[in-house]
Length: 319
Picture 1 (cartoon, rainbow, N blue to C red):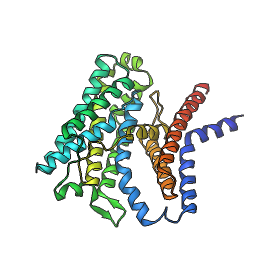
Picture 2 (picture 1 turned 180 degrees about the vertical axis):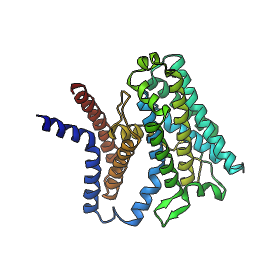
Picture 3 (picture 1 turned 135 degrees about the vertical axis):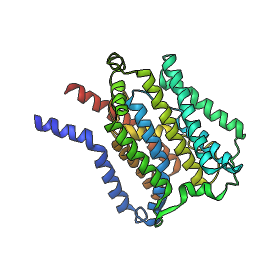
Picture 4 (picture 1 turned 120 degrees about the horizontal axis):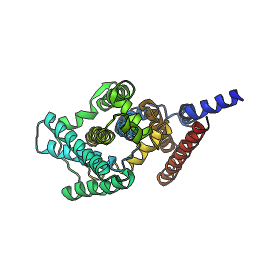
């Protein structure tokens, strides 16, 4: 009986790693293009932005909240960076201003959620429309072009052959940093405490609302970095870019073991989750699956992620 429980626990906790390996082997067998240098290079250039959003989203989920505006924050900040670059603002100042805007938008989310005791799901659905609509209004929905040379180099500078670029390095550094923050710092411990039981954490001396606000600010800043890398990779300011990345980031985190209800999750697991989703999408594209069908399959994967999260929580309650 104990062996059966142990096996079930292993399957639930490590299923995403098994799926990732199976997907890689299956797509590699189905098409020689999957492991080609060109496809691997393209994959490593695409994963950093959604990976950073997943890192940010994981922290928010651990605190027991969600953020449906994270992709719009990324688009807002990335487009702002492109505009500042175009008018020849100093590169360092451009990045600082754009990341600060992300922190400010995150602060707005956090203040509204905590001060008015609003559900984060509904509140950030509203701010998602506000942030996206505002940047579309300011740009009239037109892409900003004519970037200086340094803007593209933020994400497109080669570091290792034609595979690893600066955006990949930035992604790895931020992922390792916040993995450490969640595991080893007081800030990380408070994230788990607030997500597990907000009232109990408050009674234990943690300023829960203040901590949630801080988490939203940090999330907004990471989203800004992701947005800058998105626009740098495209070498334009695209106010309509990043649509749907919020749900992908959430699904990746949940697939990687982060509980939707809060209190449980790791950055490492979330990254494996988003890698699995992206490899799945990439493999379908390599095999020539219809783009609309890819959306159907991706949607089904998100549903499966939520079901797996439910089964995992139900199993943990029984044990």
